Amino acid sequence: MYEIQHRIAGEAFTDPDGRTGPVFNPATGEQAGTVALAADATVDAAVASAKAAAPTWAATSLSRRTKLLFAFRNLVEKHTDDIAKVLTAEHGKTLDDSRGEIARGIENIEYATAITEHMKGEMSHDVSTGIDVHTIRRPLGVVAGITPFNFPAMVPLWMLPNAVATGNAFILKPSERDPSAGMLLAELFDEAGFPPGVLNVVNGDKVAVDRLLNHPDVDGISFVGSTPVAKYIHRTAIENGKRVQALGGAKNHMIVLPDADIDLAADAAVSAGYGSAGERCMAISVVVAVGSAADPLVDAIATRIPKIAVGPGDEPGTEMGPLITEQHRDRVAGYVEAGEEAGAEVVADGRDLVERPGYFMGPTLLDRVTPSMTVYQDEIFGPVLSVVRVDTYPEAMEILNSNPYANGTAIFTRDGGAARRFESEAQVGMVGINVPVPVPVGSHSFGGWKNSLFGDTHMYGPEGIRFYTRAKAVTTRWPDPADSAVDLGFPRNV
Ligand code: NAD
Image (cartoon, rainbow, N blue to C red; front, top):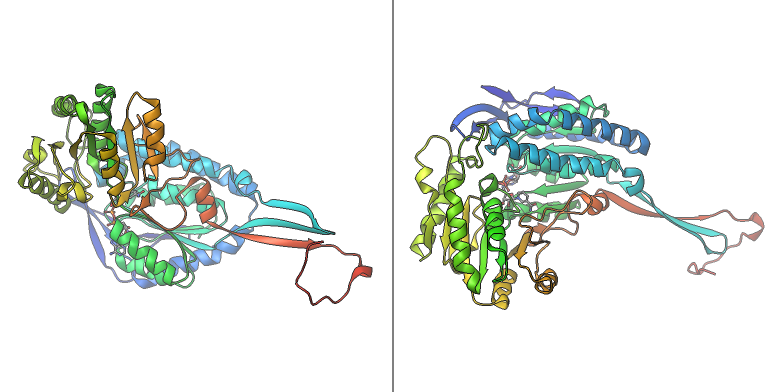
């Protein structure tokens, strides 16, 4: 049984309190290790380390930062298989999926390597006689990232590269359910040559999060997780005067119009609904089938489901792994039961896998779901696809835009005009046109609307750079001493 502690100022740090939580292998249901749950003193040590490192790091040249980011990028790529192995062991997703999330994380390091471009300020010469104004961007200081279980490598990499590239010191608080990938990334970060304290990792639960939220020396908080916790993080950080971005849960709809290529749409619904066992914030969980699309689409999805290979993520050939915990698996199965009781038709039932060791549940398809059912309303975060049938496009849009979540959505159609209209009318942060999981690349920021994001800035990309910096306007005058005079009026530009 392995034991995971913390990493502060480039060194392993043992928690003084000795409080720990279990880390399971979801494919077997057996406990594989323990993770330290940080005491306040541990968080304080991490913040002190970051605070000590921040001024020198902020004064480090952009070219030096770029070199270190390149070294980090190359190490992460080189060790992709090592990270994927621990990630799959603790999360359960397939090895291929783990490699995929690491690749998407690397995109964000690559974006940050262009920091000399991103940090360019603005300059206006001669705004008034003999006066110039320029705007520069400065780091916040110490920033923390609190991350969810479902992307233990990618989500930390949504935050860390831009945070440090802009000159901040960073504290990562990974999910306590699968902390090893974050620890491995931190070791590679230190190996790349970043000064000690620029990254610190504190493992833990609500105690650690609350200490970060209330610590006077933490200047900014990036959060990704469920909506109730995101709301709490946003509110508390604001009350404490911190800059905050808090991404929450999702309920992503895929609209299929009657003219869509049904095979393409069915492949997309299956991939986006059951990939990573539905534990993706951009997973499709509701298919809104318009008019005559419904019957052939349900049939096409149903014929694909028995071919999905469910098993341990590290077994060759596995396409879908287990869910994260037993409790979560039972909760997901409970939603299927509730949907059935409320009148939904169970076309494919994944509950028959529940008896097997590990936290497995098979792909499940519910037809004739209505917006009044809990299976429609709540974020399920499991391999359950609900089909809602409607007659017209406006009805589909009414359902989509009435949903309180607004992370991602997709439309499947051959009609460019309908797709273009959808792009404007969907009240959702990320939209796919014949693309079921429209996660933007590293150069475009990621974020939902409504209950899927609290705060003003999306994550990574250009908005990430803005989030981790403050603008400063500098007005400069190099006067001729002969022109000096007292003037009590408000400065006027002449
Ligand atoms: P979670 O909210 O339970 O946990 C996220 C983080 O918050 C963890 O680090 C956890 O330790 C901490 N935490 C949990 N409860 C807390 C509390 N009461 N007070 C303070 N901190 C607390 O989320 P999860 O189960 O790890 O992840 C799944 C959720 O994350 C889903 O809702 C999913 O949609 C969402 N998610 C959203 C996005 C997005 O981009 N919008 C991306 C990935 C995951």
